[in-house]
Length: 104
Image 1 (tube, one colour):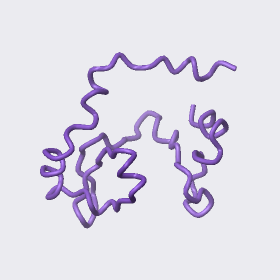
Image 2 (cartoon, one colour):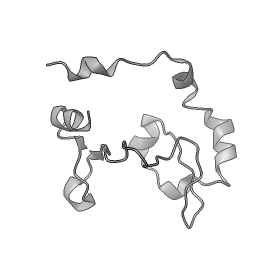
Image 3 (spheres, one colour):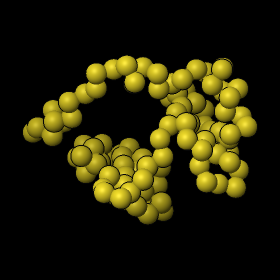
């Protein structure tokens, strides 16, 4: 799936692991999707020197530019009150059949 996304959207997505080689493209990390690997969920604390929190963003925030240091365990409660739970709608949705994306 990651390779398909990168192939269909080469200007914005890649499976290239090297930060220098991928530039500003989004890294679609398929290597975490195997037995024994872990993945940080939304709103989880991250091991970092600034006590970061894995935080969903709006596209406007992405466009404005943010720093990962903006999202910490100290600042997160106020953000949640101000912005709300950006993933609330996902938990209630029925999901999407990804097999459609693999059809040629």
